Image 1 (cartoon, rainbow, N blue to C red):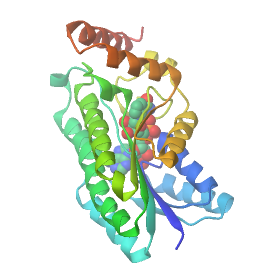
Image 2: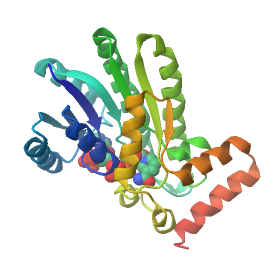
Image 3: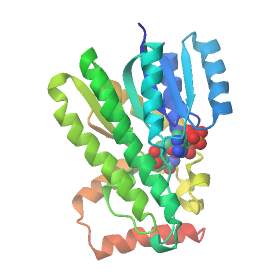
Image 4: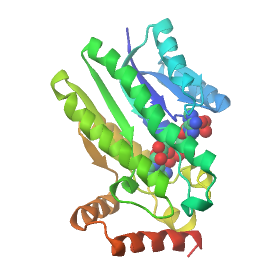
Length: 262
Ligand SMILES: NC(=O)c1ccc[n+]([C@@H]2O[C@H](COP(=O)([O-])OP(=O)(O)OC[C@H]3O[C@@H](n4cnc5c(N)ncnc54)[C@H](OP(=O)(O)O)[C@@H]3O)[C@@H](O)[C@H]2O)c1
C-alpha cells in the first residue's frame, strides 16, 4: 500500500503548492476542497506529470458530515494516510459587530471544527499504523489578538495552541504535529476575505515558498514553523511584548490603514 497525503484546501494557494511537493516526491494524494472542476484539473495534471494516484473529494468541510465522507472514502479505497495537511481556511475583515455572523460561524466551523474533527479520526488511524505526520495551517495572526480580524485571529490561535498540545501528547507514539505560521501570502485568501487587500498583499510571500518551508518542517517533525524572515521577526516581537492597549492599537491601525488602501 502506497503512502497517501490527505490535504484539505488543495484546490489553490498554499494547499495546492504543498500537494505539488508531495506529488513530486512520489506520494499518492487525497485532495479535498469544494471546487470540483479545479480538483479534477489538478488530478489529471499531477497523475500525468508525477505518475502517482490522485483521489479528489469535492466537499464543503464546514459541514459536519464531510469528515464522515472522507473517512468512508479512505476505508473503501483502503488508503494509508501517513500525512494529513489541515490547510483549508479563510479570513474576514472589519469590526466584529458589522460582519455577517453566519459567515463568521462558517469560519469557526471550517478553521476550528473541521480541522479538529479530521485530526481526531486520522490520528486514530495513524496510531494503528504506528506512523504519521500532521501539518496544521495557523497564521502569524495566531500570536496576538487582532482587532478588525478578531474571529479569524482567534481561530488561528486555537489552531496553534491545539497543534502544540497535541504534538506533545503524541510524542511517545512517534506521531508529529507541526503548526505552520504564514504571514501574508499571495493567494486567493485576499479576494475571499473581503477587505483584506492592498498593503498586506504588497509584502506577501509566494505560496510556493511558504509551502516549501511547511513541507520541510513537517518532514522533520518540527512542532512549529514560521514562514519567512519578516514573519519570524514579528513572531519574536510578539514574544517580547505583552498584549496591552498599545499593541492592540498598533495592530488595529495597521488593519485600518490596509482597509483604506494606504
Ligand atoms: N494567504 C495568506 O495571507 C495567509 C496567511 C496566513 C494563513 N493563511 C492560511 O492558509 C490557509 C490556506 O489559505 P490560502 O492563503 O492558500 O488561500 P486560498 O488560496 O483561498 O486557499 C484556501 C483553500 O481552502 C479551500 N476551502 C475554503 N473553504 C472551504 C470549505 N468550506 N471546504 C473545503 N475547502 C475549503 C479552498 O478551496 P475551495 O474554494 O475549492 O473550497 C482553497 O483550496 C488558510 O487556512 C489560511 O487561513 C493564509
